[in-house]
Image (cartoon, rainbow, N blue to C red; front, side, top):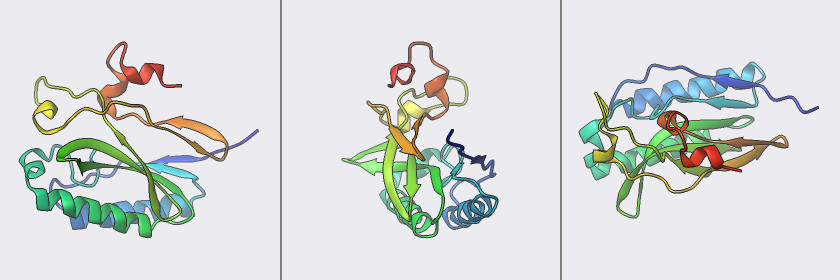
Length: 161
């Protein structure tokens, strides 16, 4: 039987503090690795803090987010990580989760179910994802979801295979 140890790092990121949040994430990746974990997960939009709101309208902020994610990847050997961040792609922004393995970003998932009620205004800032993201680690299949994706009945993520 394959055994996999998963750490969940419940950091408290500060909205907009990319440098500070990047350092927290790198520290927690090292801590999880040192404790024998194979995978460490981080909260939704851990890199930017939640909710980043109008910071997402600044292209430079989004470019800096990707640079910070690449820095996180370079500093994360010996463990896989899933890190929440906003991704700018084809002129749109997605609420995303990056899979980091062996010092590289090896895959990115885009949140499909964007809440727009109460304090949530995600449809204003993000384009919804369109496909599931499944990866293997130590022979075990994982599907990545972000928050609302698992709360909405009949969400596309229910049918990921």
